[in-house]
Structures are given as structure tokens and as C-alpha cells.
Amino acid sequence: MTEQSFRLTYSTMYDPPEELHTNFEAEVAKIKANLGNEFGMIIDNQDVFTDEKFEDHSPIDTEMVLGIFQEGGKKSADLAMASSRRAAKSWNKTPWQERVALVRAAANRINERVYELGAVISLEVGKNRMEALADAAETADLILYAADQMEENNGFVVKMGQDPLVGYTATNYSVLKPYGVWLVISPFNFPGALTGGPVGAALVAGNTVVMKPATDTSWTARIIAECFREVGFPDGVVNFVSGSGSTTGQALIDNPEVDGVTFTGSFDVGMKIFRQFANGEYPRPTILEMGGKNPAIISKNADLDRAAQGIFRSAFGLQGQKCSATSRVYVEEQVYEELAGKLEELTKNAVLDDPTKRSTFMGPVANKYAYQDFKTFTEELSQAGEFLVGGKVLTEGEYGKGYFCEPTIATDVPLDHRLWKQEMFLPITMLAKVKNLDDAMKEANDVAYGLTAGFYGNKEETQWFFENIEAGVTYANRPQGATTGAWPGFQPFGGWKGSGSSGKNAGGHYYVQLYMHEQINSVIK
Ligand code: NDP
Image (tube, rainbow, N blue to C red; front, side):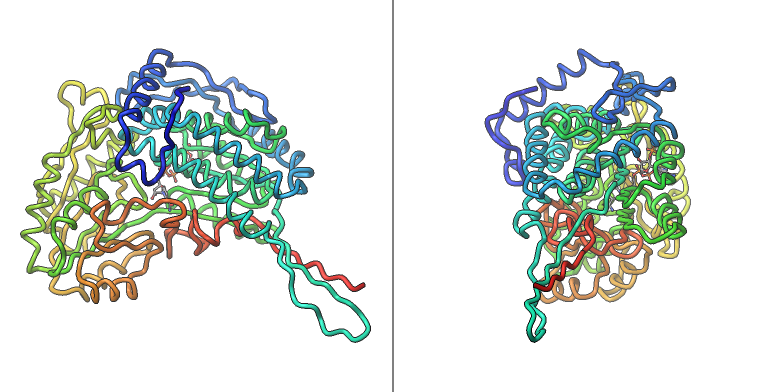
């Protein structure tokens, strides 16, 4: 673990001191010198091993085995659920102030290990240095935000009105109470924030937790689980299970002990879980955070330098594998050529390399399936339209060891082509010329998703954009990212339509309440 004298936050991230780089590089070197260890699951605070294992490979160099993990299967899923149920009896009733204190201690522990976590995220996912560290820091911030919300709302104990009963004194309280046992299933692309965030909210609300990360990012989740164990969470309150989604994940979903679930991942898996839960004995909370097909709209009045910068960053940051990535751009015809030129210039100069290096903007895509998808989609797009830039995988020299794909901008693809509506989750964005802003808005909203959206234009147009766009997180005139870059407490994150089920955003005012149900305590003296 590397000592740090400053804290990585939303504001320090954009202009970090040199110390950030030296700390990160020291952690990468340390980790690379000690690869290939075996890691257990954590159930009842014990390391648990199974007969069946899997190797965690880096997408930067597929021969690099990062670690050996357990293929949990049904037996481990059931063990973890039973452990969570046992622990729920006392954790559910632990005063919220004690829960807040312990959850904060875990977030602080994550902050102490932030460089180690960032280095592992970079090697596991292929995220560049700053994106990886941001994911690690956001993990702690999301957890702290949930703790703060609990405290600011006095544990969600609210005194209600006194009934006008003559001759009696009545008192009424509304109390939010935990559901019991919460399951958290997380995706590969934000393995820190999207595992730790929901886990923190569920815990501070009083639920015990079983977490199952994506197979590709088991190491990141294991470190988060260690942080909870290290600060003294009681046995069984936080359990970590590894293994494939279709077996271990499904066994967890099937387990009757689950009182509520937070799933972040693809639309198809999310909807499958939603339908299965709908067929249960009674309704249980099902928080789903799913895919996106995020549009950016560019008015003829836009600052085109800002727009190009924002689109470039959001389309290709993390290799386009953000649920919030800009995957569609609608540009008013008067400024189409100029914007396309600026975007092409930025994209041609993007640095693709080992993402742990300081100068790298883009690393590899996550795994062989994403790499294959890139080849399939670019082949299809090459037949339907043109590439302004990109379109190929890189196989020369060091690139050949990993899953490197060129940042790709497709143009002249007919607006009725299926790829205008399907999430590709790759460094591919599509550019279209539109006659006016109304046409752009019609296209932007004509998808089953509604996660994020961006706009560049004047003040009146911006107001019109906010009033008409169907999405959970919307941005205007932002060079830092057209559709990406949300941070807890600033831009709470969640989606409409097929992008999310709860209608409330993580890292916001209404989130931690989703992990509790209301009880009214009414008493007559
Ligand atoms: P997947 O849906 O493939 O997987 C998500 C998680 O579900 C993984 O842990 C996976 O395990 C598990 N899983 C798969 N099948 C099942 C099953 N039958 N039962 C239970 N669990 C299962 O998504 P990705 O990991 O590929 O992540 C990318 C997707 O996530 C994109 O669609 C993206 O838009 C979305 N996303 C949404 C966000 C939001 O906030 N709205 C944020 C980030 C991503 P395994 O890895 O072992 O298959």
C-alpha cells in the first residue's frame, strides 16, 4: 500500500500532483512483480476455495495471468446466502449510527488502498491511469455519500402528524427499515464504483450483502471485500462470491433468501432477472442499471471545439465501454463538415497503448468477445456507410498481445440501420447530418434506452433540450465529456426507459431509500 498525502477527488483528478503518478507507477510495478496468486471468495469473513478455478487474464496482454479465482457455483452461492441470512438478524437491528461509522471506515480503507485498487483496475479492465484511479476513488465516494445521506436524514426516522383523537395522545413515526439480505451483481466496466457503491448503500441501510462481480474483474471486487473485512464488519454481513454469471450468478438470483437485488449490466441479463423476480412469490425490490445508446445533439450555434472535445472523450474514453458513452451524434447540416473535421483530427491523434502508461488515452477492449464484436460491427458498418476514421483492430507488435481496437467514427449510415438503436459497447460512434434540431431530438429519443445525453448550442436551445430529451443524466456544452463523467453528489447517475428500473439515480438524494421499506409506528398513550 502506498501512503498518500492528498486525497483523490472529483476536483483533484483533473489537475493531479506528480505524487499521483509516482504512487500509481509504484503500485503497478509491485503488482506486476507478484502476479498469479490464488484468491478465495470471502464468506462469513473466511477465505473459501472450490475445486473449480478460473484464471483472470489482462486484456493488455492475454498471456498475463493476474490471478486465480474460484468458480463458486451453486454450493458457494447457497453458502454465502445462508451466511448473509444469519448475519442479517443482528445487522438489520444495529443502530444506524453504528452502521454509518463502520461503512465510513470501509470507505476510508478503500481510500488508503486507492492506488493498489486503481492499478488492479487498469490491468484487469484496460482502463487508462486516470480512469482507473477515478473508478477506485468513486467507489469510496459513493459509499461515503450513502453514509452521509443516512446521517443527514437522521436514519430516516420521521415524526408524522398527531391524530386529533379526543381524550388520547397519539404519536406516529415513519421509519425506513432494511429489507434483509441484498444481492449485488456488477459489470466489468466500473468494477470498483458499481460494486462498492451499491454494497455501501445496502449496508448503511441495514441489509447484509452478497456481491458477485463480473468474471473479468474478480480481483477488484475481492479487494473491496477485503476492505470491509479489514475494518471489522461482523461475519456474514459482507460476502464475496466469484464465478460465471450463467452459473454462480444465476444460482444467486434463484436463491430464495434474496430480499432485494441491484444488478448493473446489460439490458438482456437485466430484463431476464426482472422477469424472473416478477414471477416470485411476492414483489421484491429489483434495482436494474442497464445499457445505453447515448446521443449527442449539435446545434448550428454550438461551440464546435467544445463539442468535438466532448464527443471525442465520451465516445472513446474507456474504449467506448461506458454505459454513458456517446454512441450517436446528430449534427445540424450547416456545421456538419466542420465538426466532422475537428472530430477526425482529435481521434486520429488518440494515443492507444498500455493503459498503465501516463500518456495513454485508450487501452484494449475488455475481452475476446468484445474484440470479436468490434470486428463484426465494423464489417457491418463498412457495408452500410463510411469510416471517417478507424475501423480496424491493431495487431502489430505489442498490440498483437492484447485486444486493441481503433477508435472508429462511422458516417453515412442510413438512419434506419439497426446499429443506430443497438448498444455496441465499443470504441465506435456514429455521426449523422440532420436538417434541424427537431429531427435530431426525434432520432435521439427513438430508442429503448434513456441513460445519458449531451447537447451543444445556445441558451434557449439548451433549455429546449432539457425539456424534451428522454434520459436520466443530461449535459450541455461540456468539453469534459458530451455524455460521460458523472460523479456522486454532483451528477447522480441512473437511466430512464430500458436503462434503469428505479427512476432514481445512484449518488443522489433518493438512492439509499431504495434499500429500505417504510414502517409506520403509531401508538396511543
Ligand atoms: P453483463 O450483463 O454481461 O454482466 C453483468 C453481470 O451479470 C456480470 O457480473 C455477469 O457475470 C452477471 N451475469 C451474467 N449472466 C447472469 C445471470 N444469468 N444471472 C446472474 N448474473 C449474471 O454486462 P457486462 O459486464 O458486459 O457490462 C456491460 C453492460 O453493463 C453494458 O450493457 C452497459 O451499458 C451496462 N452498464 C450499465 C450501467 C448503468 O449504470 N446503467 C453502468 C455500467 C454498465 P459474468 O461476468 O460472469 O458473465
